[in-house]
Length: 178
Image (cartoon, helix red, strand yellow):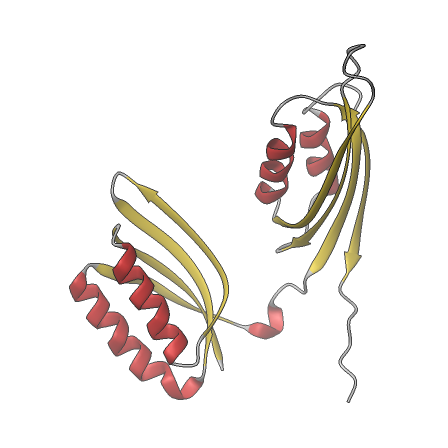
């Protein structure tokens, strides 16, 4: 198996991009991660895929065919699995003054720090008739890279005055037993 980081670019053609992804799946490929952006009718995508080594030559020829149709694989970076980051989890408890959109802002901050939200549980506290708008949130997120706790905390504290934060990073210690 090889793990590739593919950079794909071209005109925004959803049907063709779907066929591209299906082609990788038909080669027994597995998508480990993906990011896509569309601007001004142009697509840029980043895919992390794992493909059996026996399909490497065929995959490259398939990529050439898609390039002729308008979706080009710009780069293929082979990743060394031994040096990849082992996933960790971030558990975050937040409590503070509520404002509209704060949950979205929290997720955006986490995403920019390499944390993909898996679970978000938020509820409201206080009496809205008296003007007490408080919230409490618990988030579990998968980290795609090591996180700088001071930078993350600094970004979160800027969201709302008096925010209380409890943050913990849990290493993945799951072990397969035969």
